[in-house]
Image: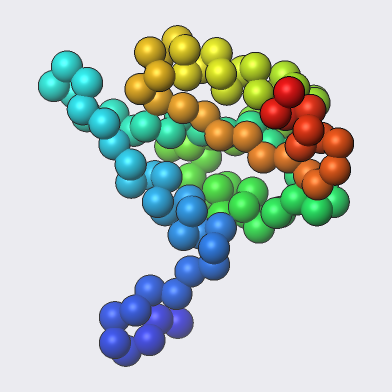
Length: 104
């Protein structure tokens, strides 16, 4: 239920999702969304509410489940390179060694 003063109440995950959905770039006269989606492994220490916030928008911003963090990082980097670094995909990982694997 929204407050009467026009304030929109969102969780942090919903706010991040809304922010990413509203970021566009104009390339050769065509406006396109900057974020192409994401990769995620949802487990202990990770934010499952982010997956819940992204689910209603899976047509506009798909979320792919990765098998390991390194492959998600490589896929996101390849996506950005393919799109000449004008678009990106995000990655999420659980706390612990998975995050180190994502970054290295």
